Image (cartoon, rainbow, N blue to C red; front, side, top):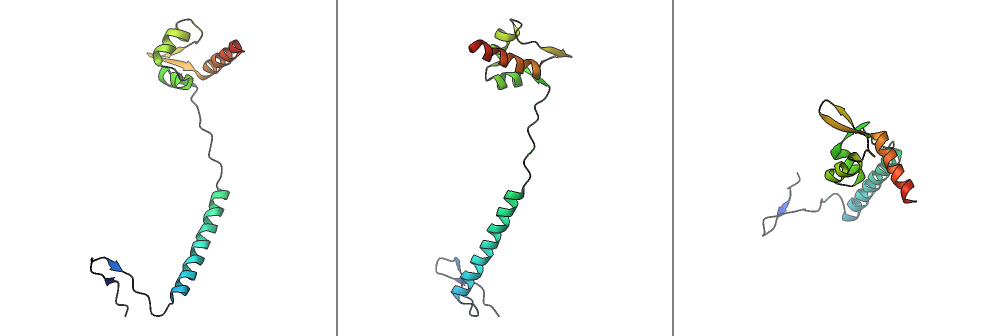
Length: 114
């Protein structure tokens, strides 16, 4: 019968070597197991299907549009919405920006800059 872990003076368990297995045999066995696990992991990583593209909604609220343009809500209201460069639509009381309008606005900004 295996006596279990030995206790040291500090109270922590210490492993006793198993009398039927030498340290080299145990190490070789563990290294073989580790190599098999690494090979299995490599197959899993390379065989994984690509993640689906993130879907952007058709209509964005003002916060989302401002975040995508990297401006504040106030800048979005004071600038392109106030001057009519960015057309918005209402659904109930919510003001939304169509994604196509936002893309066209960015294209227009790039065209003006060049």
